[in-house]
Length: 502
Ligand code: GLN
Image 1 (cartoon, rainbow, N blue to C red):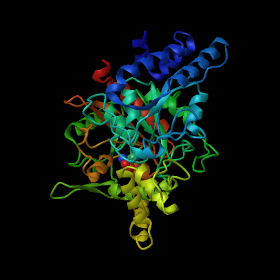
Image 2 (cartoon, helix red, strand yellow):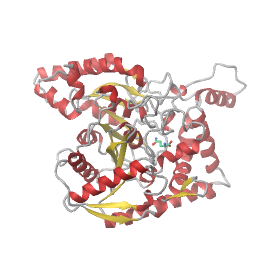
Image 3 (tube, rainbow, N blue to C red):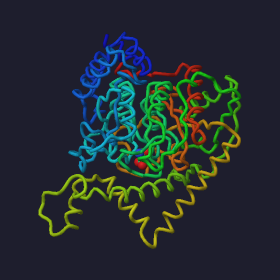
Image 4 (tube, protein in one colour):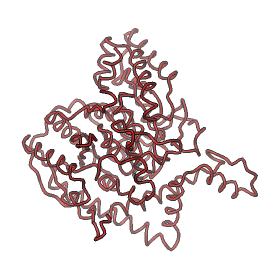
């Protein structure tokens, strides 16, 4: 029984629970058992909340026995990135600073999952405060990629992506500031959606770069991503940047193919920086769309261009712009972790309050987080503000304008999610710049506030998943998901299972 339960998608699982074929209690036990067996090889979870999960499953089963209406996720075991506030368990952001922190309130996205009947299995690992692309910046321990434990799962939502791929949860939530849902989804062979900025409430998501952050789902296939996106989307008065407009029903329209789909092909993204196998997988996807009746349109995103110098070093306006904006926002958002308002406080004797702040921060925050706070503070300081921060905002506008122009000619853009497949643990930790370049295809989407979907496009010769990315105009998640579903159905590339679960 437990083997079959783990094979069900979130959608199938909720149907099995709703029809009485399976109880929520059986589903949660199957997942807790899988966690026990696989976690030692993965370390995807910071905290498994077995008692809470069992109690939530009991509630769902009681509801069904009493003939009460069942929510759209009734009995579906999900995992949450550990930067989403929950009233149960801890919310650590994988930082020593918040190792003992318990949130006094619930993130809106989490409350919506609970209302829909989802069962929360636990909190997943991330790069500290979501700063990173490999989960190696976690203040606790890195997560391993279920396809190859010597490789990273991507980041920063690496724990969520690894858990979905390894079937230690049915689906998960992550957050995406510069690619943190899509890049780990690509590395782990699952589907990840970064919604339009303002589509999902950020209330209760621990802030990193507030003008970029968005919560989104990770699932085994496009339908599961649509199912979760339906539940968590919508206006929330508690987040002033959430947008008050109707959400629609992503799942209901999913199987309707998009007629006369115009697929934009951004030539700039297919430079030498791109791994050959990834290029050919994306070209195959393009050809499949053509067979399905789509028109392929060449488009240009000049300010997201990737340059390579004579020595082979990569550079991109988008990467430079993103890291200035994100670090500036981070430096101000993370000022609250001072040992008084929140988090770790030093035990050592202090001379005065400033000494207390700086010792507490020095002890509680990791290297990468400190680097970003310092760089962000620098770019915001008088004298450098215009040269860096203000200039980055202008570049951000140019990047957005490029997308607006492209969407005059096409409905969605097709491109890679990542320049390479999952890299080895330790490979990029010595050089932060090479780590930042893991995001070249994802960050311009956040700068422009657009929705982006990553879905599996194949598996490399070395047995690692390859991700493709669809980017859409604001509030067209429906189009992205339908276009993604068209590919998934026609290619048969879906619900990839890493060797550890086969
Ligand atoms: N890798 C990017 C960064 O380090 C993106 C992280 C994210 O989306 N949270 O900032």
